[in-house]
Amino acid sequence: YKRQLFLSLGVYLLPGMFKTSDGKSQRPAGAVYAWVDAFLLPEPKHLGWGTDLHDAIAKVRKEGKPKPIIIDFTGVTCTNCSYNENTVFPQAKVNDLLNQFERVQLYTDWLPAELYATDPGEEAREDEGRLNKKFKIAAFGTDQLPLYVVLLPIADGKVQVLGVYQEGKINSPDKFAAWLKDSLAKAKK
Image 1 (cartoon, rainbow, N blue to C red):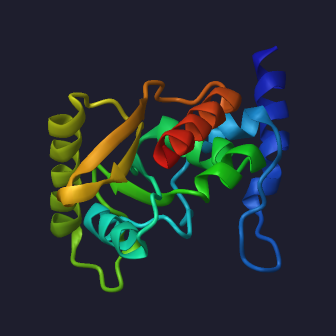
Image 2: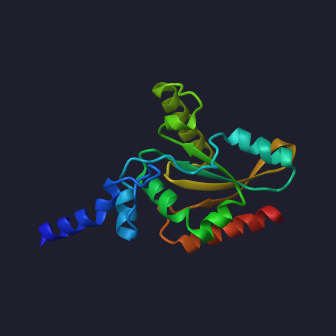
Image 3: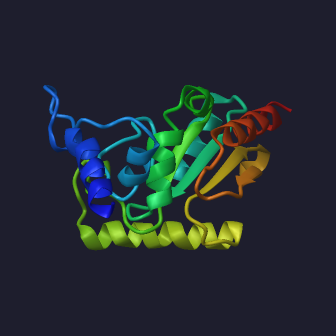
């Protein structure tokens, strides 16, 4: 029985061994692959997510609109982070809402080299990750990973916390989408 199970899984995952004509990995569809994919090494993703909270706050202030900022505290080695980013964030109901935020990913282990114009080296990337982790713990009192936080820049250079999503691995995309909608509504008040 176990042999058949592993053989079936191998056949199911076989397309992942080959590249498409544009050089990208083929990805099998379905929940089984989403679970397996969370354990694979990450591929570059999330165009449009910044990695500097100070830049995001400055950009929102410059635009002069009450636009909330969502922080995705993530990690290169975090399987739940990868699962959420690869299977929940791309869903239309979630992605459409995320596009209404200024988005920032703060890596708490180390930053991937491809996020830099010029790689500053492993030690510098790890130092930045450690600083992000310290900030998360100091500001939000938890070392949970992933952690999603919505902020809104307000007057006098301050920032208001509109919400913290308490669930690490997002088990209900509908619940996460509702939290995003609620955060957007709070930002408009």
